[in-house]
Every structure is written in C-alpha cells, then in structure tokens.
Length: 247
Image (cartoon, rainbow, N blue to C red; front, side, top):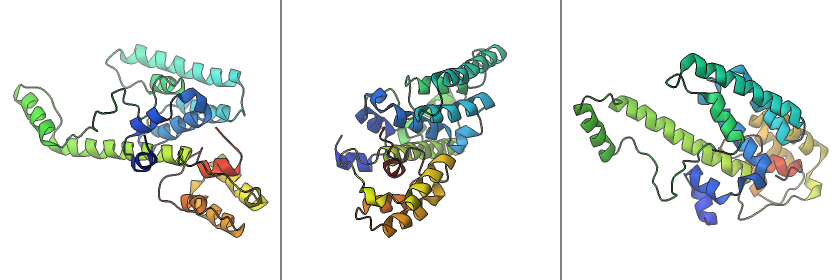
C-alpha cells in the first residue's frame, strides 16, 4: 500500500493488512476494536458483561488494570455466551460476546473480511446482485426486498467508512510520522488532551486545536486533524502524541 492509497482507502481490510503484524501494535489495535464496538448500531445490542469488558480492555491496553481483572471480565463474557448458546441453540440470536472475545484475541478484527485484497466491496444494488436475488426468489427462496437491500447497502457503506476513518484517526499517516515539539505540550494542552482521552469527549477536539495554535504549533497537520470531520476515538494519533502514548 502506498501513502496515496492509505489516504484514499475505502476498505479497512486493505489498511489492516498493511498494519500487520497486529500484535506489534497491540494497544492501538485494541482501541480500534473498542471504537468499532462502541458504534451505536452495535453498542445498543450489547449486554452488560460486554460493555464492562470493553471498558476494562481500554484500561488494560493502557496498563491501568492488571491481567487478573482483564481475564475476569473476559470470563464473565464467556459465561454469558455459554448461557446464550444454551438458551438459543445454534440457530439462536447472534452471539456478540463470542465475536467480541475473538476480536480481542486478534482472531478476527472489525473490517477484516478474510478474503483476498483483490475482491471488491459488496454491492447489494448492482445488476448482478439484483438478478441473483430474482433468481432465488423465483425458486421460492426467501430473499430481501429491494427496499431492504437499499438499507443493507447503507449500513454496509457506513460501516466501511467508519472503520477506514477509525484507522486513519488512530494510526494517522504511517508513511509520514509526526513528531511534537515539547513546547507545544503546555499544561493547558495536556489537560485538554487528557480529559478528551479519559472521558471520550472528542467533541472537544476543535478546542484542543485552538490551544495548540496558541503554543505556536507549526505543524498544520495537527490542528487540522483536530478540526477534521472524521469521527475521533480513543487512540487518536494527535491525542496520543500529546500524551506520549506511542503504541
């Protein structure tokens, strides 16, 4: 992958492939996973043990809790998943707990499609897909309607856009690493960055940009990113840079 491709990429799969081996970037990969599971369309489906595990995983990634507490949180999700399997059987509701555990083991990452990088994005609305649906419907198979296909495509496109933006927010531009002048780390800048990081208050990023400019920050990529339209998440490369969080 080239720098141009990274900046324009609309496939998290390609970006994740470029970032391998994932375990070398363990903290940031963990925060990418947590950002994905905090997306509203997933978050509202999670039971309490999963919500707790995400909170503990974020703290564990930063070394704020020990292995014992992290394992205890994972064990609670395993127990919940076992109960869900017994209650629903193999054809029961989606087992979000198991999927979350697999993600945190880096067995599968959000946006990792498990297919060759040459495979195109799914398009539920192209002519071939429509013909396939009609053929299945003519054989009496239960397939989604055109209206449902439109909604599924919207959800899929939103997922892809969010995850490529998460990766650019967390990893920045890996082809052009940015350093920070210690004089830009004023008490005001560090306090703002720490509050944003601790409380997930990323709506405060433009205020952080203003504070950085007050320090005569000469790297325009930094305040520009703070004011950017993309969603910011824990692990954002600018906040990490200010707080000296490397990986």
